[in-house]
Image 1: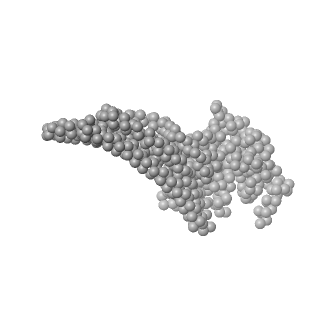
Image 2 (image 1 turned 135 degrees about the vertical axis):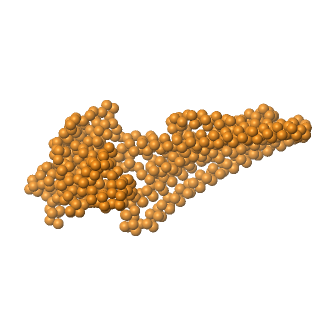
Length: 589
């Protein structure tokens, strides 16, 4: 994915818009209806000059009032047909745009959310949101109105050009001589507009990314009094976006002005020749009037095309960015023929000769020659200094990444042979940083198992010591917890996470500092809940506070991505080394 800070590379051609076809294809009936009504409305417009010619030659020329009456009655009928056809055309194309956009957004989000963790490490959420929001809206503007205007203008241009040839081949031929001079600026300016449109979208994505990361870290911003600094950063990003938009708008304005001046100048020249032919008796006044109206229609159509061309170029830039997202592929995927875990699961784990380097840090191994075997139902604690590789073990077990060498097996089955949903469905995780969504308390607990009943949700909350504070909320389990759980304390958020894990009822349990945000009284209660939860399950525990892991069946000490010692709390203290040093620093203090 292109970094938003990079200088925008040259935009691809308008061919990027071909990627819209799969989203338009399911709505063929609306597209056909729109084309039918487009043809009907265009035909109605093209009949008008013929009525005017008839009125001039047969009505005014012969002073025939009946002819004039019939002509104006015909004009009224044409206007009625035009109004109905235009309204129906607008309905079809607007609904087509809305439906296509909905499909586009759904498929784009579904694609992005399935990408692996590595993608999100190298991408900014604000930019992704910009592509889901701003870019898709640009595309919607093209589908909902731009394409309609463009095709209507193209149909009218072709129709008016054909009628000009039929009306006066001589004047039409003269007009054709100046068309190349009109099309040249469209090609030259249009390419520049497309490049500027892509740059403008990138600058807007930069601003969205800054706003997203700043607003999501509002407490830190306020704690360090960075409101003014962050406001300046955002203002600078908006200024860059504005400068880019100004260049795009200016170029598009020049394109529109150049086309209108050239085209109308050419039409004036041709009409001047026609007026002289009328004076010389070579051409009827009605014919010239009809030709003038068709020329105006053609000129208006070219002006419309020049204006919508900017929208087309802007949408092409947006679709190119969206296409880049669709082009992203997850490195971690399901195998072609996945195996299944044995039923019932025993929960035996084996990590064998693992070596792993994060893609963002290829020169620093996070794990080296890591080998560990965990028996079914055993509770193993991973301890060690920060950066020792504890969280990496969890990330590999969840298959957020694959190791460069070595393998991980559950009940003898290699993780890479399992479908991701089956692997992760067998694991319950209590992370160090609990994520709370903007739904209700019940919805957040049910995140652990979507089909859980209300009674099961409440039972999980009871077991996680979360029932009391949830019941104290104004609406109890239906209370909205706010974005990122702003209405909860850190300890309350952590209890929600524990309730999720309890509700999931998975054979493998991963606890990453599961009680780090709890007070002493709550921690004692939660420890009892965790002990009940761990029974009959294989459990891996990460903890910096050694007091929380003394009850583990085995403690594995990591340092620099390697296992340096393992045993019980007492045996490791007696052995000395890193664990004894960590224990001395914590317990003596």
